[in-house]
Amino acid sequence: MLPPVTNKRIYIFSPSSAVGNKAAVKRGIARLKALGHEVEVDPSTFARHMRFAGDDATRLAAIERATASGADIAIITRGGYGLTRLLPMLPYKAIAKAIDRGTQFVGLSDFTAFQNAVLVETGRVTWSGPAVGEDFGVEAEPDEIMQACFEDLVAGQGEGTGWQLPRAEAFGEPLQAKGVLWGGNLAIVSALAGTPWLPKVKGGILFLEDVHEHPYRIERMLTQLLYTGVLQQQKAIVLGHFTNWVPVPHDKGFRLNTVIEWLRSQVKAPVLTGLPFGHVPTKVCLPVGAKVTLAAEGRDAFLLWGHMH
Image (cartoon, helix red, strand yellow):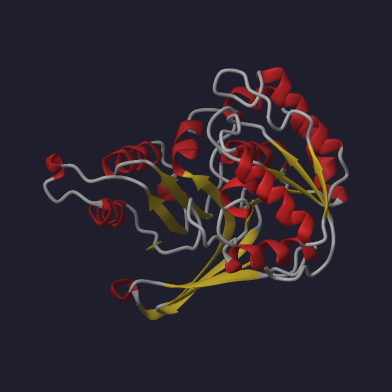
């Protein structure tokens, strides 16, 4: 396990689905403590109401406690479903003040709803990154790149990330695009279309990922964003990982690459793949709502946001 860069206060809460794998979350808590961090676990972290981590009032109260905690990091246990139910009731002013005081909200998957709504309502930056159970609570050692990126965030040292594009996507001429980074889980972003909480970002850098979604469903959600005019307004679209889907005989060759090529035929903006983010062990931390620079030359791609603390 990597040594901590600095010790910070971390608040753990469950704003979406109920924790199914309590052992994983407890392992994650233990590992964060072993790194030297002061960890506070919300009292309703393991609550359950149907499929949710408590009813709406319980989960809203957990968000309010995380917001008021004064922690350096407020991180979710897991994603799932439930945050879109809470968007009209979130304490946006308090969240903005918490972020201004130094609290960094971290998560992915269903947390995309929270992140994009906070961007719309407050203009503040939140972080797409790991969850306690899925990432820190794995039975083997946590992914070193994920952990290093999280520790950079905790220490205020992260200034960007880089990855290698597939050989077929290598850029002959250097690419550079600047804009607001936004997006996250594709299912959530597409579900926000037509609501007050889909960011009206023009000239942005849109990043997307998903899990358990067959490519035809991915294409259907992208079509929703295309027909609402969202995709055409971006300077670039960056795709992370789309995992845990199973081909079926009816596909007859229809694959994820089919969808990506279709997307490229529909928009003028460059579409890059391979971003190390999604429901995968190796994930970076990405500042949702920050102004970033996307650069690519040959197979090397970078997202850069500089020192933000």
